[in-house]
Amino acid sequence: MLSSVTRVALICLFILQSWVLASAQTTDIVLYATETTVKAGNWLVEADATAAGGAHIRYPDAGAPKLTTAFANPANYFETTFNTQAGVAYRLWMRGKADANSTNNDSAWVQFSGSVDSTGTPVFRIGTTDATMFNLEECTGCGISAWGWNDNMFQGLGPLIYFATTGPQTIRVQLREDGLALDQIVLSPTKYLNTAPGAPKNDTTILPKSQ
Image (tube, rainbow, N blue to C red):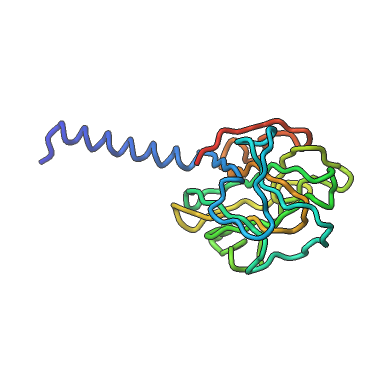
């Protein structure tokens, strides 16, 4: 038979574990795009006093045509890692700016190592041509100016991102249009689920990185 002290200790442990799980499920993931684990091709990390951490990652504008589909094995991409909770719906936001504020320079393809949809079906996976699109301009004619936030949908809110397992995940950002710079990537289950972390134009929001 458990002593009263042991029972209290077990109850406290259960409460602590429950709190840790609940906290993990409601914690926003904020990544600085320059802190890559892999960087391939022409993506450059450049000093920028207006960017998170004092730098951004940019693919210089070379006037290349837009890539209409993602590559399973792209030549130009970068990756970073983070930790997530399985079965939690995350909204993806990224902060970017386009060379010359041109809408020909404002989009990228985004993939993950273990992403699924709400039914558990794999989507937007690294190593496939399936990807979700980041487009800085929110709508045709909306325009862009300096830094701005957007999610993974042109007009409206994009599909939520889920993960099949709890633990480490990888995000890959690959070229769609050259001339794009990025500094912050957010995956939010609560605070920014329906509202962007900052403005779509002339934004100055710098979030503290979480991982």
